Length: 99
Image 1 (cartoon, rainbow, N blue to C red):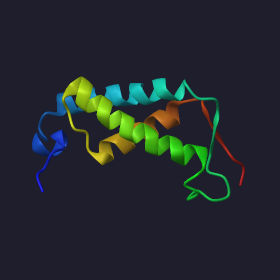
Image 2: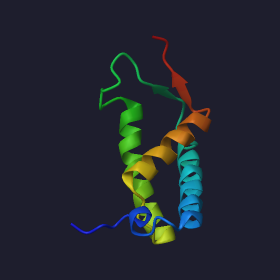
Image 3: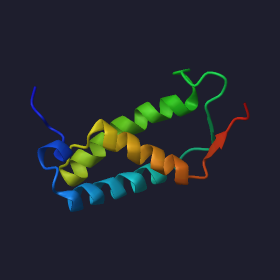
């Protein structure tokens, strides 16, 4: 299996990694604007049919494609995940259920 993530291939290129991650966070924020308010985790956070979980899967795939197409950069799953949840934390589109 070949290493394909830019972060692993060239870990010292921090300027590029930071630029891509900042753009990914902006990308996620822009995609969130396309949706009405989304409830975070109801009674079962592992309900894969919950809107948040479906949104996560779709946006992860689209963001990976965007990154490769725009930056010729293969983001690691960890980078995508971190940028996604940073954007969730900054967005006003998410509502947390009372437990």
